[in-house]
Length: 566
Image (cartoon, rainbow, N blue to C red):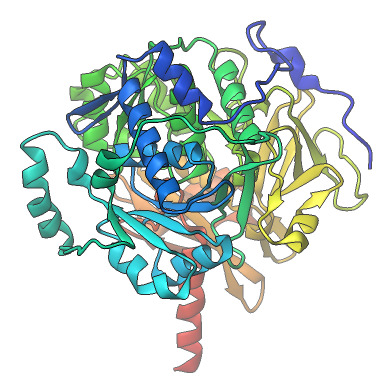
């Protein structure tokens, strides 16, 4: 297949961003050691009133690594982490790496079936989890290879008197109170750190070959697959991010850490970048708009990576104008399309720059982004990062397509995964030579800027026309009454499929189906106009704030099946 020789995107690079970077061949955890030596007394993280310095986080990570080794964890063993954003999540992640193990990030919202699949697929020996999710882990433990479970709670890293009050608040909110009887297989996180020794360990790790992370995909098209990311993959993407955000100064920035660390986007653009650069992380255990607004103002936060729904949530909060958000310098949006209206309104509110980026778990994750300071194109996902080739695969010819031709987005670069864990068949299916096939449809314009059309599998075929949900949603987001929107295809006996949209209105706004149809007919071709509309108070989302289109599709299928049976 033809290779990409022309890289028109380079002409847009400002002089501060190199087209190629001299990457450091090192382990990911070495960044924490380096920052602890460079900024020992600087705050590494702030969590609900408690702060920890870089020296303290490094010390705690080494202590945990020591205890993991005492439990029998050896180089290459998998250690699962099932934690919300907390200091423990940072300590567990780097502690596991310092122990020479491979991190297996696990979503705390997983149900028992998903936990069991991931533990069995990864072969994890140890799980570090929150007390709130421990019952789920305990129920599946005997059906997995898990030998040890280490438990911690939100209260463990809260300042006095919050640490005493929080358990009562937690029980009232969740109805869950976990009584733990520790033994030689069930351990207390805080006790392990007290017993551990803060000593460095050396391993013969090849950063380019040895894994740092097994990051499981969402499993939207089948069982979740373990994406194999090496130390080098993650180091590379961290440095690419550093160069893209070239105005951000080491040791001086404060970042809002609301993106989950167990998701590769939050892991790289927040945690790993912050650790590499000596930034201060304001750790938020979950996304609450009022708490984010307060945190930005109180801590004079300068960076706020997020997802579109996170920015929408802030923009539509009634108290936004009561808070000073002018400290924000830059925001990189990912995980879902960024509506142009949201981008413009957020920049007006903060005076900072908000740009859309693009990537996948398999690319560590970022491969493409708009320039934060420089030429950008509304509606575009931007241009490839340094050392990253991106091309469009023409489905008809099997070759690289020219500008303006829609096809599947392919990516090649040092941040691309080694493959899927214990799944060579899936690995082979997703690579075409050296190119990783994203499954996303898009095109490149004459200037080298890329545009997402939609997920290949989400395309709606109605009356023979190909309709991409994103183009419908972009139009809907421009309506002054609409806060969130999602379009799907539902079976139609005449057209094959027809477009249905789910709408969440802004507080105090009203909109009828007739008014929406009239609006859409002015903005899009007749065959794209939604035939079905459902207004909702909220839409199902992932922890990152990505709207779960597949959940809506499944709900429609179940509804139709019920109707057919009745």
